[in-house]
Length: 139
Length: 139
Length: 139
Length: 139
Image (cartoon, rainbow over all chains, first blue to last red; front, side, top):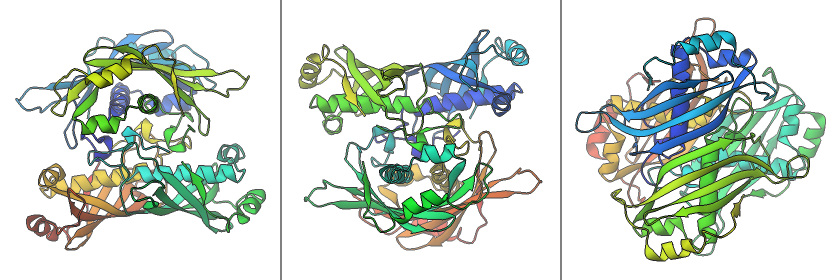
């Protein structure tokens, strides 16, 4: 994933709200890799409402840099789940990988009316198997 | 309306895609002033699909500046309408008003399935009276 | 502050990353009310780097709703400060005020090269007086 | 390039301002393929200021769809250039490619102070060779 010009701000770096969007890209990618389509879940009448987001900023990303979002399933509950993320520059100067931002998102399963619901059983099963999986990569 | 930090880019000025969002703010404000609620129209099963957008950039806006969107109804057709805009700095250095960006949006009326429809009669009537109105201000 | 159409997502509500941008609007407004211009601070060679952001989502905001950002200075340190926020709907159904999202931002003072610096003394003094002030409103 | 959830709006489709950002992604990609780095040009003291943008919307993109930006160099002048775009769904239902949005961007070369300048000679030469090239793909 390359940093877009529109994602930068007047400080010359990526605006801090943008990483929250990249967390979402990582999460979508994690779900897709697990064979779970979020568009499908929505058509089935369930939504994941965001309950909490947290991000720690270690170093900024700049225009045109290549970044990767590592995503893993941190916790799985009956009505929700938590994803954790590390946004990294795989090709940072010096050869190693550089961690830019870490964070998490807590999601709660609801129906269309916004009422909290248990995760669909099949989804829960699929996700259970992934709580010990290594991080999925997006970017 | 004050320019938000998140709306700037690495060039230190507002990203050019942002003005298209401000056009929309101007349009919403124009409609609201005319007693028309877009949320209401959507609940009534009609949508305005964007058919075309154009923008000319004369001067950039910067963080924390106060800007105003002048909006007027440029054309009204049976199935669509065109809004025109001028985004200005009312308090530009020198005392006068400075035009930053001008543009237009062509909208087409559709139903929820995306089929083109005539504008609802009452809406058309309300808007007809506004085609000769001076520009509405938002910001 | 009215919710813009561009700030909503396919779930019909405001995208969760948007509240982080509104936190920033609240923060800018708090600083401006305190007589502090962030644009000014930047010209003076100091920047506030975002170190951490957290948000809890209680209820969603929708298109065209009027929302207010309450901002207060939660903590003031020699090299940084923390703002806290509550994004509310002042005119929620039922007459009372509804809290939509609460959150905080930790900022660290740096120079242009990104090195951590002490807050400028005058700024620190101005802000000290505000740590016990009631929340500033934006929107 | 996959459509991100954050790029959709309450109509369930991608917000129309987003395509302008994708035009930019296409343009960056075109330049990179041509061996031209925009970050490099900026470091050399030249900027491309956006003078005009136009977009026609034929069909909407939705969350999670794969889209491609075709970009070509429409015109090359001594002080500016025009890019043209077609944003397409390569895997539309029915097997064929579906054109979603077409558009263009006029750019003007300036120095850091915003004064219009001639395109750097080497850049002009590189670009000249590309005016007859087929469209570059991004996404």
